[in-house]
Each structure stands twice: as C-alpha cells, then as structure tokens.
Amino acid sequence: MHATAGAGHEDRLRPLPYAPTAVLFDLDGTLVDSAPAILTALELAFTELDLPRQTPAELMRFVGPPLVDGFRLHAGLTGAANAEAVATYRRHYRDTMLDSPLYEGVTELVRALRAAEVPLAVATSKHERYACEILEHAGLLSCFSVVSGAAAGDLGGRKAQVIHAAIERLAQAGVDVSRPVHVGDLDHDVAGAQAEGIDCIGALWGYGNPEVLRGAVALAATPAEVAKLLGMEV
Image 1: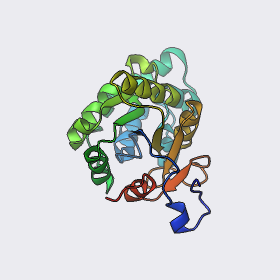
Image 2: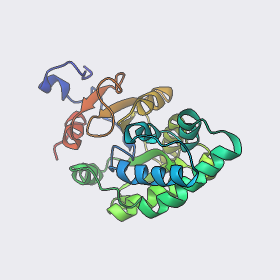
Image 3: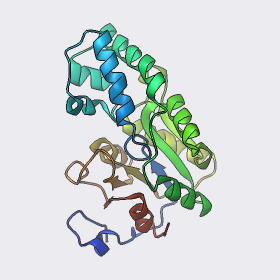
C-alpha cells in the first residue's frame, strides 16, 4: 500500500511495497537549504541587469527548475538576454553557493543508506560541477556513486533528463536499477520521476507542500521518515 497525504501517521510511514534498488536525491530543498544563497545571487543579478525587482516569494519560483526556464517564465527573458541573465546569476552564485547548509537529519539518512550498501545518486537541475562542489563542502560527495546535473549552457538540465542520466550512469557502474526511487521536494521532481517510470517520495521539509507534491508515492516530513519509508531506522 502506498502512503498518502491523508493517511494516518503510521499508515503514512508504512514502508514502500518494494525494496528500492537505488535511491536518487534532489539537491536544492532536499539535501541542502540553498534558497538563501540562490535568492541573494538572484537579487544581485536583477540589480546588475536593471531588471524589475521581484519579491523573495517571486524569486523562489526560480529555485529548482533550470535557470533558462526561470528567466524565461518569470522575467520574460529570451535569447541573448536570457543567456546574459544566467551568466550574471552564476557569477554571483559562485560567491554564495557554499552557504547552503544540509538539512537536519540528511547526513544521518545518507550515511545510513551508504552503510547499508544502497546505491545513491543525486539528480539535480543545477550545474553538475556546482552540485559536486556543494556536496564536497558538505562532506557527502563520497557517499554518492553518481551526481547527475546540467551540463554547460544548462544542457540536459530538465528533471526527467537528469534522472534518466543518473539511472543510466548507475547501470553502467553495475548497479541494479530495476526499482529506483527518487526523493525530491517540488512538483517537477514528481513529474520528472513519473516521466522516467519511477516513484518519487515527497520531501516536505524542503520548498514544497502536500499540494505541490501530489502524485508522490509517499510524503516524508523529515529525512528520518524517508528512512522509515525505505524500511530502515536512522
């Protein structure tokens, strides 16, 4: 029985009806609280480019999806203007990105899964090199067999693409990828996982909520609850 948002606490945390052969994690809003660093870089980019000011709530729309989509959908920028905005943001983000603390309980969850020899990957729309640097700074990079993110120019950064690439790279490393599961905090995590034919556990400690995460196979309020859904204790 899959857990649902409306179920009682114990039913909601009933383990998945299968043992995942690999676990994929989103990065922003799931492993690390990156919003403050991202919003600071966005505000600096908007000021430098003389773009109309957006509130912090409006800027939160940029957190998660590829940047090219964010600047197109939420700032109306296309073509060269879009590319300039992305480059300007990234220049400022280089100075702020390591100010992204791990969420409480994430280290324990990741290390417990690693100790149990569960293959782990990160699937993020963030630039892959930046994701690796953030994980290295947080002391968790070595726990992940694969870090899958966007390439230069935001190529391949859509959620379904990075999930597909993560699974493909795990398979190339000899991992059984017959039943992977993704853990993420936003609707594009759920949609990306569904597009690849896998389940998504909704991370409620991130930037989403039950409404945003409808369609997730289960919802977890804390990393420890993810462990319970995976049939583990941390």
